[in-house]
Length: 285
Image 1 (cartoon, helix red, strand yellow):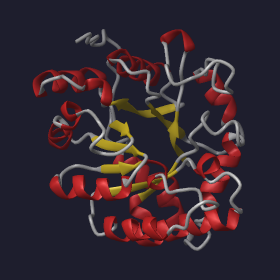
Image 2 (cartoon, helix red, strand yellow; image 1 turned 120 degrees about the vertical axis):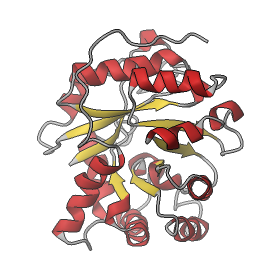
Image 3 (cartoon, rainbow, N blue to C red; image 1 turned 135 degrees about the vertical axis):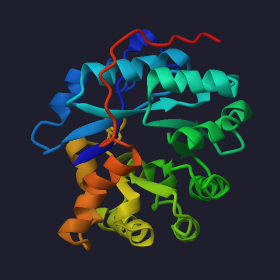
Image 4 (spheres, rainbow, N blue to C red; image 1 turned 60 degrees about the vertical axis):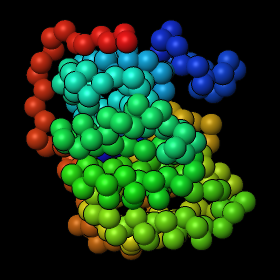
């Protein structure tokens, strides 16, 4: 299995969203990541940006991947931090840091930096996935962006951040999923459930996953733990178990696609050869 959503951070680097006293207010290293995956039969992980908020994080992510190739199979950079870069400079950043995807986050699509959205066509041109972590209408936004850019792979984090089922029904989310599933270049990531659906019976969470997988199919779904964000609610193993619980209706071959081979395809893992450990771009503007 490939865990398609993990984070690492060093508090000395500055992560403004991490509050003193919170369970996340500590440094998480590659060694911690390896220890958290012991006994889980993982073949590796996708390292996702952690909203440090500057270009330096994109350099750091590639450096971590190069230093831990058996542990970190690919990485997703921070697109928000690229706001203000023109297409040529953004292209140079991608060439130097070689991400498997770039993530754009915010309250909604319209709330993300316009100049960051403006370079999305470059991602489509270069075959780099766009990953979305939006708190409102994420699935709908992904479908609209993917329809405008048919060559672009758009990955939706955390099932599209549906509301906790203890406070709201899944009707609107289900409708958005049905519509997005009609757009073939949209991929759904089954992640974040241990945190977002805290307090909801596991069988109801499994129903969310099963609905999404039925709509998108096993060739358009991947799984992630959201470690170490998940830790206040449970371990990496518990997070992955909850994400996998909704896959029980799949055949063994279909389950393998969700757990590994779809990730290899959408993140371009099988084709990537990266032995260049030379100097990396540091872009301060």
